[in-house]
Every structure is written in structure tokens, then in C-alpha cells.
Image (cartoon, rainbow, N blue to C red; front, side, top):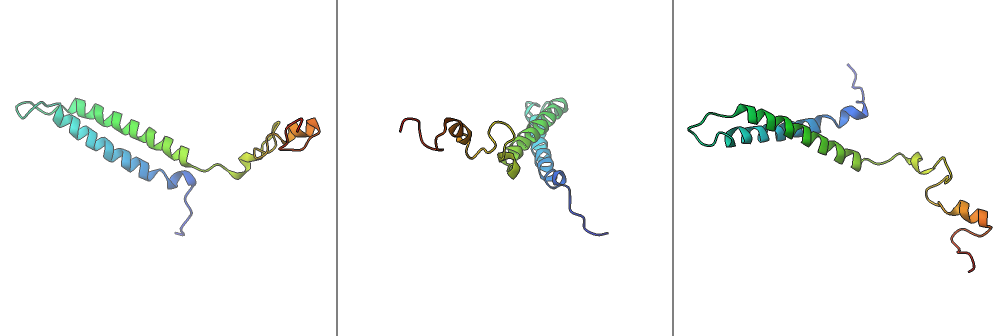
Length: 108
């Protein structure tokens, strides 16, 4: 088969899932052994599974938020479609209404 380019969502999904899985396994193992309270008591698998689930979901949500925050915006988002056509010069339209030049204050 020919090498097809992966969809954008498939390129970045494996690493966060693997990282979340590793974090959840560590949290589950630590909680299982720590909740036993010593060698005389049995392992607490119920607490370990709860810690596994919580750690997996929390780490996946945090990683997803960090990925979304670090992603660059499209170039056409700055062009605007409402009152301000360009986000580079939001005061240009107001200056045109006043009859002055952009960047100069009224009365100077």
C-alpha cells in the first residue's frame, strides 16, 4: 500500500494517549499498594482502579488543553468580518469617520 498522509487529528492523538496511560498506570499502582496499609493487608484494587481512571481522564484533559493552547491560529482569522476588517488596525475605521489620519489623536 502507498503511504497516505495521516489526518491532522491522527498525528497528535497517539502520544497523549500513551502518556495518559503511563501516568494512569503509575497512579493506579501507587494507590493500590499505598492503600493496603502494610504487608499484612491485601491489595486494594478498588482504590487502584479508581485512581487509574481519575489519573487517565485528568491527564488526558490537561494534555488536550495544552495542545489546543499551543496550536497556531489560521492566518485568515485576523482579517475580520465585522466592524473591524483587520485586527492589525482596529482604530483605522474610527479615524476615517473622524476625518483624521490613523494614529493621530484629535486636537493635535
